Length: 356
Image (cartoon, rainbow, N blue to C red; front, side):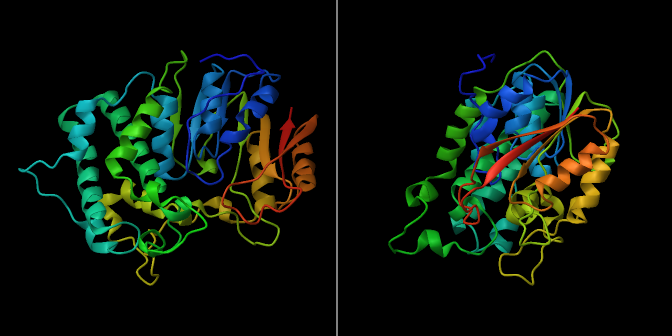
């Protein structure tokens, strides 16, 4: 997995909004100038940067407050050598006649995100993924399930207009109209075809970097371990908004899958898209105070922050806060835009702030 610094870094693909996958090569050239062996990827998200750290031979602690994202970390960062085989995939997709399958998605999400037959399949797949415990145990089971869920999540996103669950908009996929966006062929491709494609891709990225990497699933302020370097890529807050990007809102359906047994009792039925109710976390509060508290908490580590130059708080404010705890603070930036985000505008840059 080692590559020359001037080569393009190959990271797992993702349909996740906000992923930094397209900037990993640039970021790698910055990170190789820093001395560190242990690293916390505090807002792990799609896992692109956590995977970069792993590929650099670092001991990675991947954290994300969303359970769905933690499965990505388990599958691609913590996992050293476990892969899904053909037998596993057939087990996940085949109906076992002796089993009684739940119908939660079929009942609660009819006509909202997927076709009726797809909802039935999703209910079956989730049970079958959990029932991999009939075939495996221990860490092998942990990694098999994580890979299965990760493949399933990417498959779900591929079949969704905008790759999101923010609206009840199945009609965008099913209506017989001319479209200026999306790919109906991709939306209509069977779940199994998507799943197999993603499994083939992600299997190439399973490797052992010789370190004991681990995955956390908690609020960042609950982490008290020490790290040589901490990397913060927190939810972005635009200047015209009072709140940062709400990933729990955009991907609530995936969180529901990870909380399947209690899902039905944690749905906001007052809204037409029936989002899974996710408890608010610390980062929804005062962001200036949050950044200050984070920098204080990890003041003994090298700190690297990735943030947009058009965000709130401003880059100047973040730098000023970091200087309270670091002798040397430098910034580097690159033009960057997010797919499907109409608010990028001209002049948007992703800024890396480094405190040593």
